[in-house]
Image 1 (cartoon, rainbow, N blue to C red):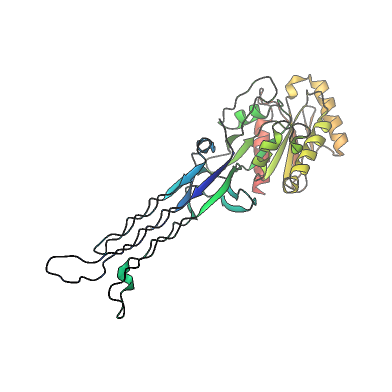
Image 2: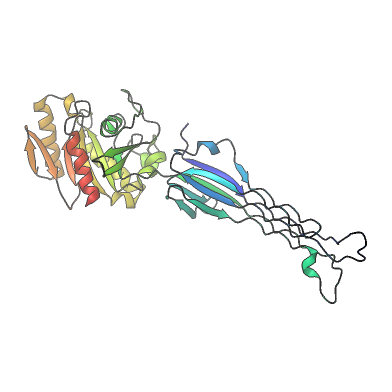
Length: 349
């Protein structure tokens, strides 16, 4: 099961107690203090694994603790340090304080190991407290306690382009033809139940990452449908690609208006991103009907096409939103190369 949010309690280990011991050996009378120091408690780290794709491993276990340090021994023997706890998370995981919501860590660097909670320091043994006035100290320090914290782990996928659209408008099909991703595709609403990432290769040296999230419905920003749960996955994207289904009951302009409003309600930051528009499934209508719907959309958007190919209008703008409007058919591979390179130009700009 895909899991992108969990609440767990993590704790570093307690430091081991210092030892209060005295040197005892045959033929040595009144041996001095020889208590060793306690070992340091284990620390808590997060390791950012580029091969991990969800937080599901933390669903069944909510308490995670590093090992305690061992106490010091006789003859100045130091206690063994506690074993560190390394929590493996996907790239894009945020660590938040479960109570205040404060962002503590934003783990976006693959293969990085980040210290979160330091282990408790081991206590000093009584050998450290010998002085000219106290030749037989019996005092040794206890180890310092570890730190416990309740945190929320939240995964926000890192992608360059995020696909936004109603359920069953062809987003999964589009990502399957522009990348090697193999999302589940079927002819019913909410086929996509988890985000999908795909890498779009432009040439041997250039590529970008595209994310398909479950479909958004009106009211998603208020918790309806699956949209609110997954809208966070396009917060980090640089470009939002609105996928509007030409064969849907709602007009293209109605679809766009509702989706744009849901994004604005959810996040002002997302609403200011660059965005473009793909008019999907144009093969579902005959050429004349498709042309009429597209022309009507341009008129309602108050935009003039910048080019026309085989009677189909296109639009591209280097500086203003929408950056482009491109009619496509993923199943017929119509204009797929055109949209791949148009998205790349925005990302490179």
